[in-house]
Each structure stands twice: as structure tokens, then as C-alpha cells.
Length: 458
Ligand code: NAD
Image 1 (cartoon, rainbow, N blue to C red):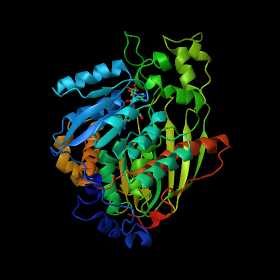
Image 2: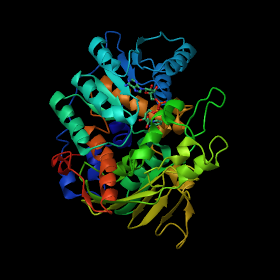
Image 3: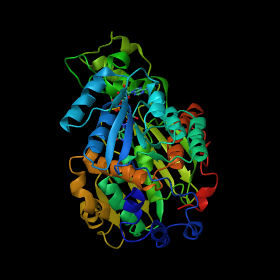
Image 4: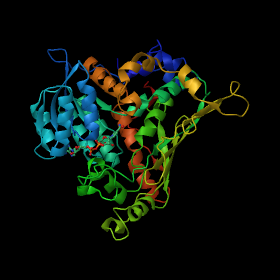
């Protein structure tokens, strides 16, 4: 059962009825059918299994592999991964399941093209550094392979359009693997939103607030966490991610936040994001971290780097239906992890930072209540049904749901819940926030990647 079912039909109604039944959506939506939804080919081999390939079997790719190897309805047949260290740890994952070691494509960074050309696969998961995502997703769609791509921001609007145009010209589905949409509280809050607990939604907040100063470093002695070294001396994300903080200034990682928000306020399905403004603070966190680190110091070569990324990037979006959204990007300062969600309507609000909510007429006057009781009461049916399946899966179990939705969508030939239009509009926040910051906070128009179809699409 794909997420379309999880999110919208597991309460016994179709997505369309579900939306029509709420008082919160625009008239256009309630009259509409999903004019872009189409049946896709069911992808299943002679044994009734989905043949899956992986591009990039680093740490995230290995999470996907672990979840795929647990399943009986798919077969992992090939991997494109040029790094022998990552291939060695991937092999251990296969050995843990006593699974057959697949065909390996390790002849450099473009060997994935040979894999797509040569292998008979039904679906592919792309879990590479950000700069590879779109070109790989485009190649996979052109090869007619059901395409799952990990999360990231884009580099340009052209890239976002190319994703949409390739999806439309090839008819190949793109599944944007935004796992946070499946977080248990996020789905319970979706349930509460659809039941009207917060009234009409007015303002939302979200973000990526994760101290990444100590990204992974491998000197053979301390395999994880230094952050002082990166690039060739780094390991996993430190090999590539830190370069973005050196050269770019914008909301580099918007989709863990905007993905859930998009579900709550029907972005691209009766609503859309129209404009944004972005501002960035000064940049101090990464530099201070390096000079104060025992493996760094003021004479370390990286202490001379100027990091462009502001320590705190704040973006504000205005939507067609009148809501405002604030996105926080905060990865270079000392802080605990948070995605900073806030869902506020005419009758109350929920915030995940303090794990509280307030509902007018129910909560004691002007006082916060613990959200936990509500989150249990409105726990989504999908979570109730699959709690055991999700046990032990990454990120509190939500990774099980995203893998399950991906596999089932491909097998059943149904519309991905987060598709090329969602990928394009969510990823576009990055280059638009960079442009806004570079221009003193100037508003930037967010393209309508659905070309007007958002009005009638549900
Ligand atoms: P990683 O560096 O551990 O893995 C990336 C892998 O891609 C590496 O093994 C690298 O060798 C490989 N690679 C690089 N270029 C390649 C190419 N041309 N062809 C094939 N393989 C190539 O990084 P990661 O932490 O696994 O992150 C990968 C992606 O997953 C990123 O987009 C990251 O943002 C995303 N991610 C998502 C979540 C989530 O919760 N959804 C969590 C972690 C990472």
C-alpha cells in the first residue's frame, strides 16, 4: 500500500473524499480529480519481485540496502559505487542477511550509466552526494526505471525544471524519498490537521537544525567525528557536504522541513508556494570549531578558510492560500537536533520544540498542554498497523515507511506520494534562498512546476 493510501486512505476514505471532507481546502480542490495521477506500469519480475539497483552505497545507501534486504518482495541486483571502502561495508550488510552479492559497477563516477544500460532493473535508489542527484535521476527516468532519489536542495531552477520535463517526456515516475513525512508525530499531526483541530492553518515553521560541525572524519584511529578535516581527508558526508558550507550561502537542506509542511497545507495540490525571502546571519560556527578543536587550532590550514554559509539562514515563504512558512537552516552552531515544526491555525497550535500544543476550548486557558496525549489519540492508522514492521528501522522507524511506500508504489504502478513536481518545488527553495540572500533579501518568485495544474490536483 503506497503512502497515498497510508496518508489518505488508511482512515477509510479516498484521498479526494478526505480532502473534500475538511473545511480547510479551497473550492477548486473539492471539485477536482487528480488530473496528473496516472496508472504506471506495474513493475514486477517473473518471480513476483521488484528488481532494485542502488546508486551510491554510502551510509544512507546502506540504510536503504538493509531495509530492502529485509523484504521478500524485492531483489537487490546491482550497485553502482566507486568507493572500495563503502563497498566493503556494504558487503558486510549483505553478509548479515546471507544475501547474494549483486553486480557491482565501480569503474568510476559514471559507471552508473553502464549499470542503467546493462541491468534489467525495475527500480533504482539514488543515495549519492547532492551534486549527482538530478543528473542520475534524469538518466534513470530516461532508462524507464522507477526512480527513487534521496533528499537535497537543488543548485538551479533549470535543474528542477529538467526533473519535471524528463518525468513528463518519459512518463517515468520520480519518487522523492522524503522520510520525515512519515515521522510518527508528523503523521499524527496530519491527522489532527485534517480533522480540523487547529482550525484553518495560518502559519507553519520547520527547518533543519542539526549541529553538523563534527561531520565524519576517518584517520583510521577516530573513525567518526572530527569536522576539522573534510574533502579527501573526510569520510562519508565530510567528503562532500562541507564544501557546500565553504562555497554557498542559502538554505542548503530544506526538504526535511518543507516536505511535512507540504502535506499539512496541500502544496501542489490545491495550494502552492509563491514567493520567498531569505536572510543569512554572519558565519562563525565552523571557523570557531576548527580553531578550538584539539585536532585543529589557529594554524590549521582549514582555519584560514572563509565559510560562506551563514550560521543561521531564515527563509519565509508565502503561499497562494495565504499561509506563511518560516524555514530554519542551522547546521554550524552548538545545538541539539530539531526540525523545529510549528503548525498554527485559527484554533490552536502544535510545536515539536517544546512538545506541546494548545487547542482553544480544550486546553486550559492560555496554557500549553503536553502534546503526547494528543499524538497518541490521533496516532495515524498506518503507524498503528505497521509499528512492529518499522521497529529497528532508521530515524525512529520512519525509514521503514518510506522504503515500503517506494517498493509498493513501484510494484503496484501507482503515483508516488512525493513526485517530480514536489521534488522540484521543494528543492527549488535552495537556489532561490541563495538568490534572495545574495540580493539583500529580495523576494524571489517560486516557479509553478505543475504549470497551473496544482489548482485541480489532489
Ligand atoms: P555518503 O558520503 O556516506 O554516501 C554517498 C555515496 O555515494 C558514497 O559512498 C560515494 O562514494 C557514492 N558516490 C559518490 N559519487 C558517486 C557516483 N558518481 N556514482 C555512484 N556512487 C557515488 O553520504 P550519505 O550520508 O549516504 O548521503 C547520501 C545522500 O543521502 C545525501 O543526499 C544525503 O543528504 C542523504 N541522506 C538522507 C538522509 C535521510 O534521512 N533521508 C539521511 C542521511 C543522508
